[in-house]
Image (cartoon, rainbow over all chains, first blue to last red; front, side):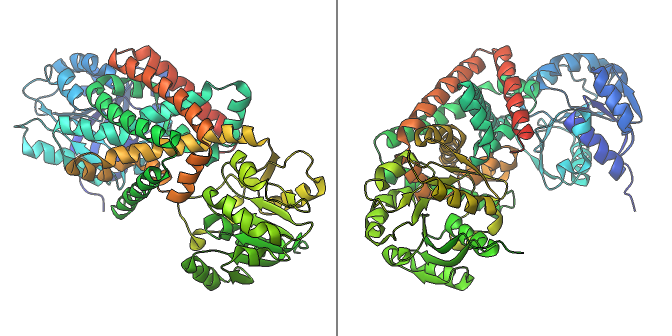
Length: 295
Length: 295
């Protein structure tokens, strides 16, 4: 027995990995009566039409949001200001405007000033993804068992937050409310810094002489491989994350660099007990993650 | 139809994850007629006896190697000099002495001086492992589809190398011969540096204030989680790897740090095209690894 729709019309602005996964699960669960997908890329629109997961596929975001009671921005963070200006005059009274971006203070900065008073503005961030991109990379199960963080500004209508939260719960996620600045700090260490480091080490390997590089690929199963998966994530999306969460990323990076320098020194001076001590502590953190069922 | 045994008696010195996996696959494939397992840890010996994967379980490595035509050292690198001195006088004429250590120049340094002339000394390194430790963590399939690097010193008897290579091939691995110094360089970038970085970032997260730390665990699926798996590897084994491949690790680490500093600068100054350029190149490396069937 399918539950009844929560929304009349969902407009997705940007229909890549995340947007198309939302379309799939919203359709499967009957969460919205109608889905309109907007994408500036002609090839994404053509993929989307072929997939048949939206009722309508359009190029113009302003057209997509008309009469939608839920609008979700699923484009890279660097486009938000422009997208906001394009859609703001066309948002329906009482509509919810949300997004899936990985930084939340920048979303407030870029969108809050242009959102009309008659719209419920509730930024969001599903903690889910893969290293693949584009409409065809999406799948309905992407959000199952994952967290979705919502960062409604103070005073946001609670019923609207609840309707949006219900969408994510029906997609299989657990919803958590958070203050945007705190979100950006937590994500800087759990997601942005790990990606930055993975990109860096893969780049370092790429800079080695040709013969060594071939062997790096050959013997990548010994640890390096896991980094290459992370470093294969969407380049534009990640460029925008680093540019838009600069302060928190630089702060975590400087802590990391301090710690790395201390380890470098311990290796140089042969201080085995310092290494062993750290490696034993990090093993305990892994256990906590397994116990939290996030492994 | 089981192939005939290559060895009469295999002595495994140290029977943790790798040693016990070797015992399992040697037994399953009938590679040796008899397996003797030696471990200084009473609990490892008791686990091993319970598993029933060795004909004999002993504490003393000198006792284990008697009449063995293949001896494999599977203990942490820091024990090699001591193990070598203990077993050298008891090695049978014509026996092969090998190991599974992740650094190969240090193995030459610590073992070559004590190995008797009547023994074939052929260091080895199966590129395989998991984050789990101990005899019970092993499994016979660990080496399937993986590489095994052998680093025989110049002049080593080719028939002996071929017998050892055949063991690894029957375990499912592809064997590659390499010069020890080159091995240590390639592994420094593909394995040792990735582990060092993973240990560091998990340690950095552990150093954050308690409330943030709890959220790091909660939201670890966004990238951090993959690092915690790597940073859960055996502390003693990894301490010894860093101490014994110091030069190559410090060299790769300094290249990595340079590259990270350049990225840090690009983020601080908002140089988006530099970020995008790197992130696009690293994506290509991932494709090479997938094409090399190592993903």
